[in-house]
Image (tube, rainbow, N blue to C red; front, side, top):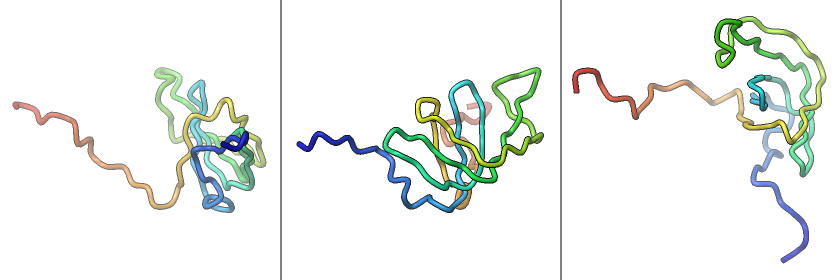
Length: 99
C-alpha cells in the first residue's frame, strides 16, 4: 500500500468542461472546471450561482448570480456532475396513484 490517498472521483475528464457543483449549506454553482487537487478543492471559471427560494431554502429558483472565477473548498463539495449529458427523468420509485 502506497501512503498516498487517491480520490474516488477522476475529475481529469471534466477539466475545461462544464460542471455543476452542490455545496454544503444548499448552494448550487455551475461553471467550467479549470483545476482541482487531491482534497477536492475546485477552481471554476465563469461560475454562476443559482439563488434559493426565500420561502423554501431547499429549492433553487431561476434567478442566478454571476461569480466569475471561484475556488470551491473541498470540505464543502457534496456533489460534482457534468452539465452536458444529463437530463432530468421521472422518479422510477414513485408509486402510481390509485395503486
